[in-house]
Amino acid sequence: MASTKTVKKPKAPRRKKVEAKSKGLGAQEISTAPDGLELSTLVAQDGGTVIGVYKEPLGGHPVVVAALPIEMVEPTPYQRDRSETHVKKLASAMERLGRFLDPIIAVRHDGKYWTPNGNHRLGAMRLLGQKTIVALVQPDPDVAFQILALNTEKAHNLKERSLEVIRMYRGLVGQKQGNESDFMGVFEEPHFITFGAAYEKRPRFSAGAYSSVVKRLEGFLEQPLAEALKVRDARADLLLRWDDAVVAVVDALKAKGLSSPYLKNYVVARVNFLRFKKDGEFDFDETIDKLLVATKKIDPSKVSKDDVAKVGGAPAEASDE
Image (cartoon, rainbow, N blue to C red):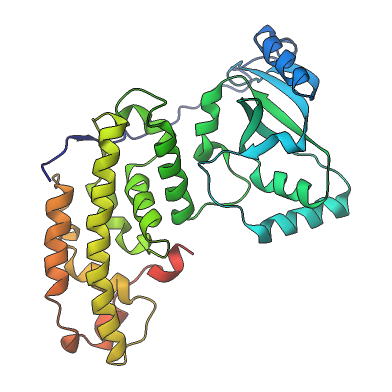
């Protein structure tokens, strides 16, 4: 595939020290938010109860505090799968406390309410048989795509982050205009997109082993979303072909008696010439092709236990589970 122009995500500027109590709205300024009145009417029509309307103190955006019928609330279709273990733990804690104190965030969508932040709390309330859930309802529908920034109730691993990003990506195609690079704030990092496409095709893919390589090669594409998605799918296919070659070497090493959680890391590190090239840009397809060829040339019979022991870092198999 021909080289595709990319743009790197700019580094965040160093945070400047600010004087205490110098920014945002004061306590007397947040109590009224006329922009939320229209949403309040819709919430009431949907069978909910508006508890209050205010301006959040950081950006002054309107927020409707509402009690929603729980059957009208569902997670956005883009986010990670719910952890039932976490839901049960959360439900047990709520039951012991006898209180629900952390409202979810919700966005009205086609007469329903999507929550990009609160899927596990929603699951726990349903497990407890509750009728109602309290939500901070946002008028801006684009909040539904801010999952990675908003969802803090359970830490994401690389697989979860990547799958959420590719689901959001596919949801945006056809809904939004613009280049992939226009959505940096939604996707956070470009390698999440490629890894997400790979995980869709191979759920047990171990992206952690390839993270250092792919992060070095990736940038946000300056192409419309629909066209850029084709590039991402093609990159995922190429990455999986490399994974096939790496797994073949790992299987051969295991067959000769080598047993280590670092075998995949070892194989990738052995062929990763980017480690010795601190500067410069490299084409994704050309580089992965070279690494694929180099991986196939590895002779497992010449690999010793000491060679594998020199590889550090988290085990590839454990990093994404």
